[in-house]
Amino acid sequence: MLTISANWLQQNKRLIIITAVCIAIAANFWAGSRVPSLNDKASLGGDLVLEDPLGFEAAYPVEPGDPLIERIFFTTVNWVLTNRQGMTFGILIAAAFMTILSLLKRRSFSSHFGNTLLGLFIGMPLGVCVNCAAPIARSLHDSGTRLETTLVTMISSPTLNIIVLTMLFSLMPVYMAVTKVAMTLFFCSYSYRYCHVIYSRTNWLRRT
Image 1 (cartoon, rainbow, N blue to C red):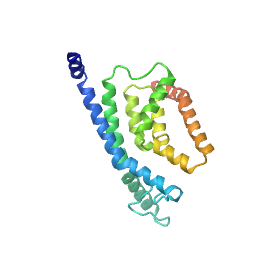
Image 2: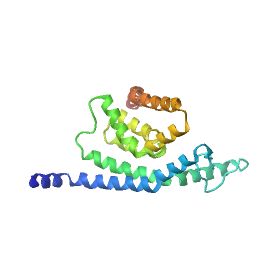
Image 3: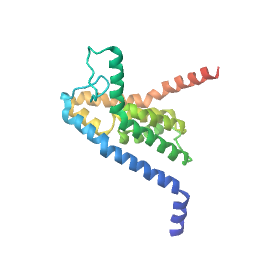
Image 4: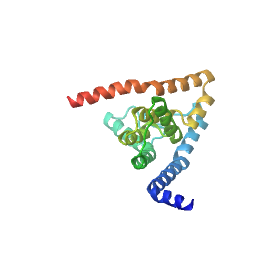
């Protein structure tokens, strides 16, 4: 038994190491950035005010009367500063996912439903915003996962994580919260059909 365990560890040591690195990156991001940020937003509730057109906090205030070029420049800088931690995490975890998937023989299920659930299983615990989910989704797609898994991961991560759901049911009437979750799940379940059509047409156009 010990020999079998030692052989299994030896054969899968790369997978174990990169999985541990992935967990460490995710835990550091959740504990140090994402969860505290979402908790702050949840505590403010309806009193939350955007300091910048593209972010909650503005390192460089932008006034409506400022010149257009100045507003564009400082809004871009504020957006970069707001998303620097999330995008750094997104790129790092995307690289980790690509490495993990390269070590796995099976990356998808035979049914669309199974691949959709896989996307939910990956996306919901991550809890990243849609900007940060983009490199993660790209890494999944380039690693050979199915289109529905990639799409559902990118949708479920910012909309169906536990803190966002808690905020949703705390701030909204129950019927609105249930409707929103139901529509999100419906979109996750069926939008892959349209994405397959669009993706197939795009590939056909590229070939021609």
